[in-house]
Image (cartoon, rainbow over all chains, first blue to last red):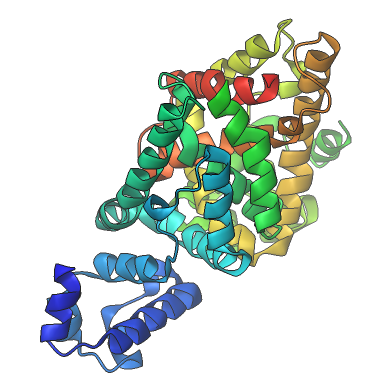
Length: 196
Length: 196
């Protein structure tokens, strides 16, 4: 990937990069997006502010790349042979602990996104759109296998359904979004809506 | 209702109460939950801090009662004769403008809820649970009419589906949650999942 090559040329090793991202996410959890400054990141890491801006462009990009770095599931790589299998595998790979961390980080970003158009743009370009491409591929295969109908309007609402499960469970019910919960939710809501 | 009677006895007219709630919601939009203080509310309204605490108990209760006051749709009152009709009527009563305001207020509360257990408790007791009772009644009638099966596991996930539509549309897609959108979403997702 061109980006990693650029970082390597500048002697930013993958280890230093990983430590930087961990520091950014820790700060994000502690103080939230608005109070997170490039100064604070620089003082917690061995990166100068100049280096941060040169390589990551902006606070929004740095934060989103840190989020993307911890994201272990590449939906596009999952291919179990059935839509149900693919969705369950996605939840299994996510894991209880990562799902919790992700929910709490996204909760912290929900407000910031509204006030920082560049953060929303970075989230969309670097995190959501690649994810959507993976979903599209998963759903396309399900259409080809005859599991779901191409013109089913629910096909474009898979993220809405999944996010709703996570948000209501995590925020309103204030319970952990476990794999068990999300798997039942997929069977109860996502698959029936897609198979209608 | 006992609560209104209590306010009336203390000469807090419905008009003063409505003005107070409007001021609280305006403050909430401007500064967010954490920065909203009883001092700020008192200085914007003709209520003393002592009166606010005496009648509303806490900041959390005051904010949730303000939210509840602007909520015009009592789901429990809707009864059109079909589940689809009931859900569409709910969206129609909500209205585009109120839906937008509600989304932006809830976005601002998502973070605060996590850090303020008393706010979550007040939201649940005063806002979500009465709403859920209305939903339960709506779904019970649909079961009795034979529109949906009682043991369909999607029945308990109606709020999850609806909130997901609003959050992804409003936050990730950054588009207004219109009646048109939510009506299509109900037809594409909620009804098929419930009818499976």
